[in-house]
Image (cartoon, rainbow, N blue to C red):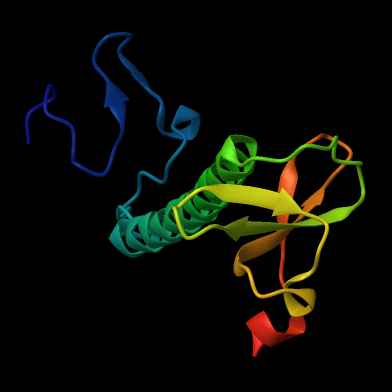
Length: 140
């Protein structure tokens, strides 16, 4: 072996011409365990699946909320286009009916008290927004 050639297990820095094994952040002797990159594919796949599930869940929540808002808008549009000759009171329940000519009207008379074609019952909340009221018969 020549004087210029150093054995593989000796850490010699040719730039500053010093042995610097003690300065390395990793083991340098032959008996040291080998450094292996960990397989992060499984972790990445789990993380991707969790993220996909979270995004899908959030999307479904937003979609449900959007559909609810659209339905509320349609109810309010339907009621505001209906005929009525009174000023609705916040907190009261009113009933929407349709005449034979297709015209709709709002009334205080409950569906069980008349023979009109009922479209639904609605509650005027404090925000002046009409909300559909479901009866026990509708839930069954």
